[in-house]
Length: 205
Image (cartoon, rainbow, N blue to C red):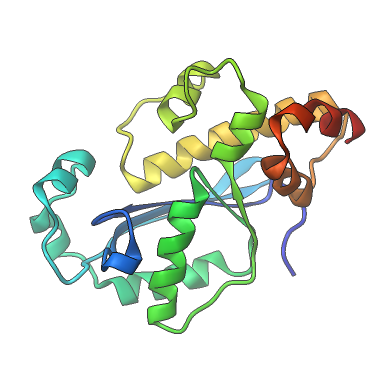
């Protein structure tokens, strides 16, 4: 049974060889944190060998080199371990459609599946923070004055920063709705609500 409260779930992030698994791109790193009642209680991080060389652009963008990946476990092995880590938890990612595509593609290769539902911190942030300069992860971390010391575009760091942003958003939603806990289904609804209807939804919540 999936956890129904939005403060208890898994926040994940992939680094990849490119933008689309349908075009043959593969995952090269996964990072994730498990939140329980808004606190990080467990972490998962692994490089994974996609079985082909990555471009110089990806090396520069992520700091992950072909030499690092040559020593990493293959994708199938890492994703099997991650499927066990994930269990039936609900899932969050920043720009979740991207991470969900790679999660689905990599798990389908090893006939593993998941029962949790996805939510997107990027879509939620767009509903809550109209004054933010943009809704990239790094920009939102700065906008919310969340302390950050590390390198974006590495999977574990990005998942940890997304988790901090997620908890901050839940606190803001709790204040706006006067709810002691925010249901995961409410967050999913908020992410799909037209911006001009967000205030009404929050007041009703």
